Image (tube, rainbow, N blue to C red; front, side, top):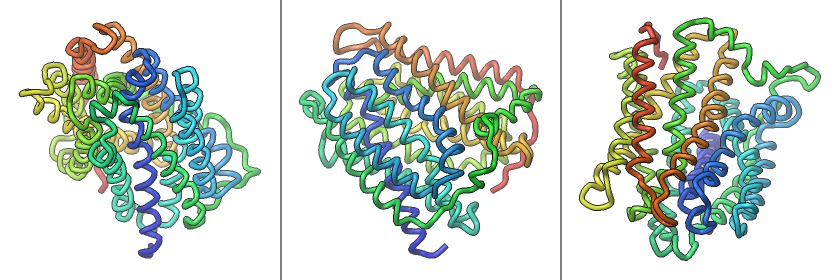
Length: 409
């Protein structure tokens, strides 16, 4: 891969995740403060990610992989996304906002697979080359948070009160339009399969991998993956709202600590995996979820603000040690025949089913702990996912039998 192509792919990744990080984190602050939404309505907005994840395989499998170059579909989806994001910025109530955010996530979620397809198609050795390109995505997410907090101060107390977070959607719309146009200049990535080749629903959704559930260990891992998404949903959906409500300054910027942590622990994962094995690595990840929410429950924006920072910084362990390790485990269990199907099934089960349930539960718990129009009992809210993650960890400890899994770097 030459330097020009590497630059193109790196910029593509930067914009892809700058777009996601530019609005998704602060939406939980924007909705209740500007559109006066309830916890249930916030849950509906965040659940669009799950609907997008469920619908994405059909867009990729039935359209992108058969009829059009991946870079062209990527461009079209981001141009559509720019228009929808602009409409989100101008929505004056949740009833008007929701159809646009739903349409946006249906358009955006397939692009996560498309940027990978475009990248892999240009690489001679993806195992060595992809990580350097993909890290620019994480940098893009971090830059988005820093721009919101430090360049424009949209998430400051005054900014939130005056509705300035509306500008995050306009910023994202511009970035999406830029990536949409830029995508048509990317290296060509032609369809993977002949348009006349038959593709069935089970192939698209990875249902052939259901046979793996006959394996007792994989079954318990599969169930744990779905259940742990419930605590995960609390973080994505309400962490930004929580930080803003209790008076933490620059919440968008502070949330980027989690992405920086993700990069660090991704690099440390091979060491932990080899030294402690798969089961202990996953258990550390689950323990981190419990610890994070305990820190959130008892921390504050004053003298105990360090507890909140540690909780955010644990994101790397929470995500990498469970979900990335889980992808490795799934790959090892599936074998050559079911590798793609198994990964598709896990993605559908977690980001689709698991997160969908998680967002709903998080919204209901948050609404049940509303003290007044502007304040929640966050201690009670965060204790729920802390206890839930601890229960999942204990069940996994008991029912999952340790087995040796090879980590291929």
